[in-house]
Amino acid sequence: MTLEKNRRDQGAPVASTQGVPSLEPLRGGPRTAISAAVAKRLFHAAVNRLDITVVEGRSGSRLGQGGPTMHIHRPDEFYARLGRDHLIGFGEAYMTGAWDAEDLAGFLTVPAARIATLIPEPLQRMRAFLAPRLPGHQRSTEANSQANISHHYDLSNEMFELFLDDTLSYSSALFDTSSTLTTAGPGSVGDHLVATPPEPTDSADPVLHSPDLAEAQGRKIERLLDEAGVTDGTRVLEIGTGWGELAIRAARRGATVRTITLSIEQLELAEERIAAAGFADRVTVQLMDYRALAATGATYDAVLSVEMIEAVGHEFWGTYFQTIDQVLAPGGRVAIQAITMPHDRMLATRDGQTWINKYIFPGGFLPSVEVIDQITRNETTLRLTEQLEMGSHYAETLRRWDRRFLSQRDAVHALGFDDLFMRVWHFYLAYSQAGFASGYINVSQLTFTRENT
Image (tube, rainbow, N blue to C red; front, side):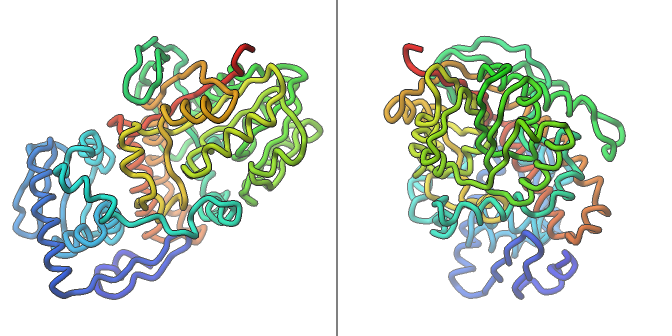
């Protein structure tokens, strides 16, 4: 489905493209008119308090206090989608081309920094009644989890290779290990380390691989392995294989590794990469849900997981950490890289469906560091002993991914993906970059040990 077709017939259903669900058609009538009018009023009130510029329709009327610019090409459609589907509608209006922004991430960063206060508090309290709920088939039960993971990670290994670096790491890089010790604040549970923000530099040609990104991804993994105490002879469990880079690096240290995934495509390529690196005898890759681990009876000296907890679902965070607790050998260590959000925003948005859920990660939901600490203290023998906060590094990682993805348009098309897919993924990468750049979301490496060990 192309954007030109969307523009020709706004009222017709937008057919699904590979990896993108169908858009619901807009319908006329009093209810649509009223919700659009309310949305317009709230949007104008919010925009006029922000350092952005919004140019509306053919009249060219301007809103905002100046800054990154948004162009609303089709105001009627934009406000109708925003009124009907709120933030999901905001993203869908971008998908159809009803609005645009030249610097999409820069524009989105401004409202993201004040997302909790843009809507009047009385309306915020109505969120639970107005916001769409996460569909039952997306909840991360054992029956649903593989389909949720497959929706995203089984799109195409070749597509991911177009914008990732040579390590095929699909998580935040760590560009510099220098850090400062910071006292407890939002998004932490005590004194913790904050990584020094990276400089936003990369190759002049985004099509080329950026060696320093691959080095930064390796630096991230090596730090996690150090935190987990992985050395020669260590028995390692990895929950969430990705494309095998952590398993390879752990095996290179002399460890034996069991790594589990629910992505068939990732499993196949990870096994190829592990064999090519010469570690097939040290690494076992299995298609397995983390909940099945306890039944195997095996224990491990180190358990690692990189940005997998986001797919667990808040109902199952206790199960996730209890499973890790059960399989961790005496004296073992756990190192997890987790995307998090502030605790109050987590509580306010729990059980709701977001644009990211609908189009990118079905069933996904971000924990807070506080809830991770609470669950491990109340339901396991694990204790959070160290946190390295590195959100600025994820903003830079995403900036590079997005830049390279956009430069590979012809190659993405050659894989069978269309312009709507390109637009969805550009919005996803820019939206995520804005979240980290604004501090609305964060990412940390978290280290756990057992009490009195």
